[in-house]
Amino acid sequence: MDSFFLYRLPGENEFTGGIGTVKTGIDCGFIISSFYNTKEATLTIVKEDDFTLDSLKDFQAGKVLLPTEINNILPIFPFPDQSTLKDEYLSDVRKIIAGLGEKEKTVYCRAICGRESIDLPSTLIALDKAFPGAMVFCFHTPQSGIWFGATPEKLLSNNNGCMTTMALAGTRKANVAEDWDRKNIEEQKMVTDYIAEIFSRHGINHWHDDQPHSKKVGKLEHLCTEFTADFSSLPDSDFLSDFLYDLSPTPALCGFPKQKSFETIRALERFSRAYYGGFMGPLFQNGDFSLYVILRSVRMDIGKWCMYAGGGITASSVPKTEWEETENKAASIMEKLHFFE
Image 1 (cartoon, rainbow, N blue to C red):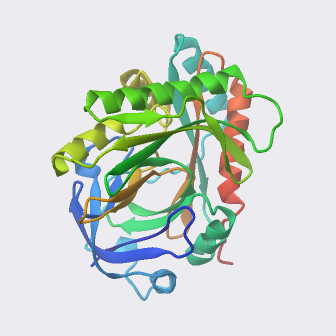
Image 2: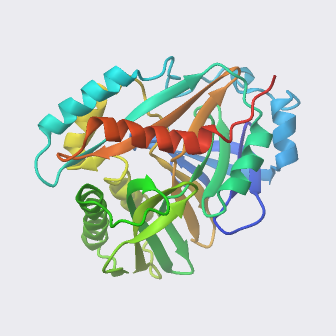
Image 3: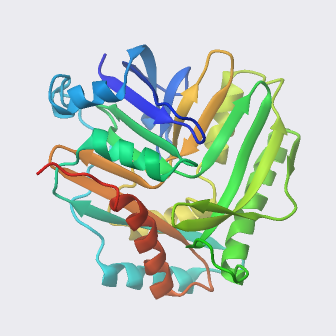
């Protein structure tokens, strides 16, 4: 047993966790998939025993093997070694804007790196209290390293044949009285249209709200459209895998058109997103699952950490405003971090 997961779903009061071994690909257990959506980097932790917050304390105290000591397995993706500079970010955003057409979008991300040692159990408790409507999570495998966070965005869930997802995009500070601006409305609509098209492409009957609503997450809010679909006759596990790989990453994490956005991200971002922007969550033997996008997330190792924050760039974006959006997103998690002295 070399890997663990711990999570608390939105609206729940208790953490669920497990420790076990890792399999490559999507299987029953706790699934972890990267932003780059390669099957080689998709992992499933097969639970063999329970894992709790107290277990997490033992892990950080060294009573459970630390990640660099396990079987000499190296992480799949390199750890970012420096933060994205503001001037670099603004320059890149201007380049992206210049290359975008109407109804196109690229999600550009920055890295924020630190050299402190994070008190993981205390941080997870703080996130749990601050974000009752988010999925608070922590996982570790030798291949992925340690990740934790509080994500507001569901990728896909299935409960007894009723499948739900959401188109979540657009960001502003919570409790603003004015109407949403055109840029955020158009950005969110791209995600809604994309998800609807993916459902139709795979022959899944679905329904979604006519108008998006505001979804508050801490001090921020986003535009959200809820989707419901009939998943009562899932053909097989391969169908689910194909559907997930087609769905993720959505334009909320990558952009639209997807391939053009991927190419821009690879050309401009100076680090690997790794599992930021991918998805994770439990898949049960009965076919139910709760999969969430890995957002508002931090990657950590011994004595260092890196947070990722991004935003949707469109032709009407203002670089300074986009930087401020990433600052607000990052601050919502960074202010909850606890460090060892």
